[in-house]
Image (cartoon, rainbow over all chains, first blue to last red; front, top):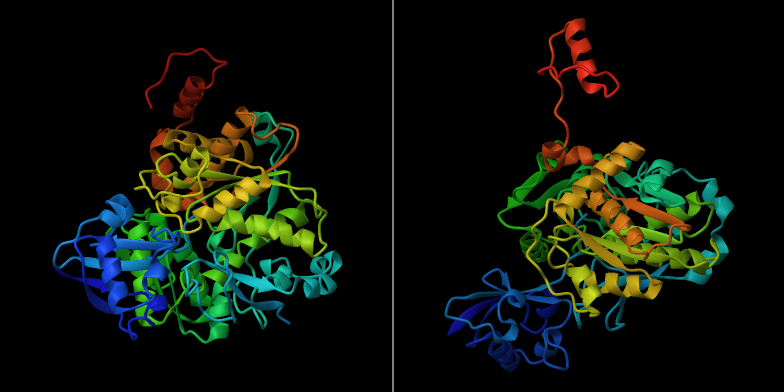
Length: 92
Length: 420
């Protein structure tokens, strides 16, 4: 079940500079574990020590924030597109 | 000239040298500019500031540029209006309106942050500036880019008010409307910024950009005679301005420009998009994103990047926050216009209505100094208020027609109504 993952600049040092990588997983949690297997060190940048997604990291599945879905339990299917994006200031 | 010593992550404390970097490599936390405050304290003074031009650069020691400012030479130093009539309407003794609706050149608080960001972009050597915007930021970036002769791309959600779309397009940038809300624009811009290497003022220049927001607070203090306000109310969207106002007030104390008399800061949001207020009221600092549904498009950000910092700054100051409905926002706009002659956009109406609510709740006492930070201009968002203001009376060009209308309008003269 390969899905495409867009990698933000701060994480590309783990992916040898690649801005997009393939990964596997039936849900987001499994996907992050799979990323960690291939790109050691990447998981602790995405998740804190309790395993939750860090405060300033946003994860999107096909453009939808996983906090509107089932967070790390959000299920994935083949061809899904995942974005990992830092929070951004703005508005007013 | 610069007193900047570097960047530091607000979340994990990691330090970085000055560079166009906006999030911590380690934890994605926002980066904060670090200054040599002892050096600033020795260099800065009230008289020195008073002798400078009336623009936001009069506080340049506390801003993160190295050379002379490149843009924004007329931005900032907006009026602090003593609001007697609005104060009377709200039943408070000492009320002020800090009026960034007349900021130069694009009529919002954004001219502050953009002046700093684009000056910094030029220092870093960028030739293209860009932003993700709910409208006002795009207006300001486009205007300042035009003045500086830079290439400019602005990204906005589709469905914005005409005034905000045309208010960017007139300056000649490439304006890109994204199908979706601001949070969708944000996500895309983060990816575009990575790929194209532009100076996105609120993405890769965010630490510099957000420092500009402090000048709103510096001016309030200077205009109060170098005193901190006891209470200040400001709207929260992504959450940049509120923590920066608090930071700015603390810096003024630290460098010896004001006495540490304390201040309480209050966050205002629209009920249709109030993730920060919800978290505050629930007693948590975890801000859960929401899907925005409000007429206050400039603060319709469901996933506020600096929401956590808003809550910290509010709690540390002893302040609070409230949200108000779209109806209350419209009433707030009208109340400010009809008591102070200031026409603000829905974000400003939110601030007025929230101030009223906090006073009625007893959260803000009636006998202390209160500042409402008005951040945007109502002439850009006419659609929002058009349905709720009186239509003009259309009459023929004869004195008799006006006489009839006047009698119909005047409560003192009893006549039967005339059709108009």
